[in-house]
Image (cartoon, rainbow, N blue to C red; front, side, top):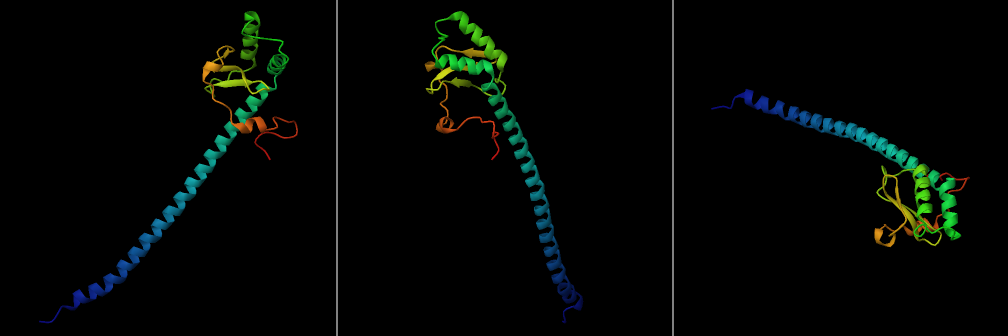
Length: 163
């Protein structure tokens, strides 16, 4: 009995069609991957840009806070040992009110601490508008990175975040 030619022709025609289908599938997967990676990369770039923008805003807010007259006067008085908030309650309340009016960063940071030139904490804010001058040693304040002390600070010729 002789094999039917239909089956032979079908197999010979199906092999190239299967190869073309596999090639088309591979090409579609590659195109979809390329398109998705481009979209994802654009989304990541957009997210990075938004995060950088928010961080730059926070940097400018913090720098603005630190160069306000209230904070500069407070730290210069502390450096000259003219004030001791632990011993003078009225002066401490006045200083708290001035710092509270200078800015509140409790929405952005868990803790904000002001340090004196000798790298010791002077006061800190752990809640909305609540500046604390006492119990600084027991406050478990995180220590700043050592690079903070080596940085030149804010200068008028260079903005933070730019080179």
